[in-house]
Length: 149
Image 1 (tube, one colour):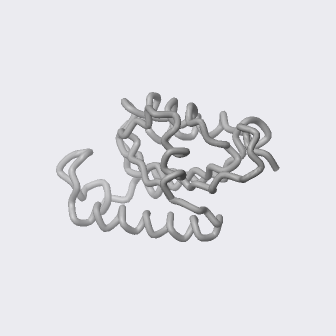
Image 2 (cartoon, rainbow, N blue to C red; image 1 turned 45 degrees about the vertical axis):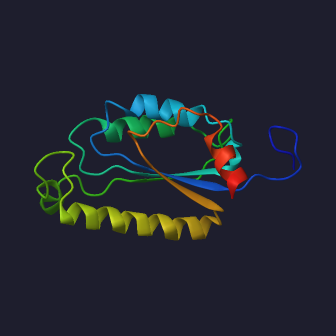
């Protein structure tokens, strides 16, 4: 099987983990950067976590996922982990939407453990952890990182 640049060698499978909380302001830009990555889409898996957002982050992510059917350019295994939006222990655990309390840190570490298990199940060669406010403006970033591997 040849990749999109004509090479017969498959590129490493990459699991991109996206954590989004109250990220409505940056998600359109961030997701545009993901769309523009110059990397074989059939070698990318996406794992999304969006919980306890007070804005439209979850709806934006769901709309973006709906536009990524596997039969087109993207051939993705996607997971959207949303959690219980009404869970008071998690929604009241911080002083603001971006505050990192000890319980929030513990919660995010548990999410990352879920990602590691998913990566093993998918036989991903690499896991890329990305927050939704980190814009991947270099479309070659995955190819460059995999070349360093």
